[in-house]
Image (cartoon, rainbow, N blue to C red; front, side):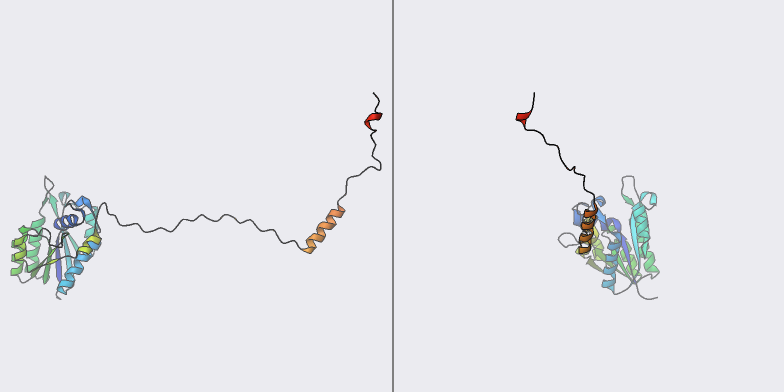
Length: 242
């Protein structure tokens, strides 16, 4: 089997860090995400750093009762993306996501699924899983979201020490994929609307000498009103008789 790399993406960390970067809050509702573009950015980063093709992208998130919503379904239908879902607790906190990531890291390392694992997370609870995966001969590299100052956002020091390396995802690439809700993409300029031209009145035909001659003949042929030979005269007023 040819060497490959794989990505393990903690969606809660990724989106909370990206939202903090572009919107100043970690709330997922504060951002609009172009998921396909964001995943392509992560794949390109991993392949550039490792020099290896990507085998698979593991996307970890929470869902009501573990049932994917419409957005998660579309993400799971993207090429090479494996959707892995936990659930929400009573207070809305995610449950089972960290455990799934840790179990997959260890199982995939034991089975030599890929040669390099890229982990997009900052959770301290994954430290032991990273160390166990390394025992089976794989490299585990952290990919962190940079904050506004260019530093890694929210990555545990224990996790950094356990991992083989730490790299930051390109900030401008994140900014192109994750937008604050009050900073929508500029609409494409529409073509100027112009009034449709109305019907053009036909120009009168040029008058030719033949037309003039025909009009003269028609005028002579038209009968004139009869005028009596002698019109009666009216006597002047001084000759009127009362």
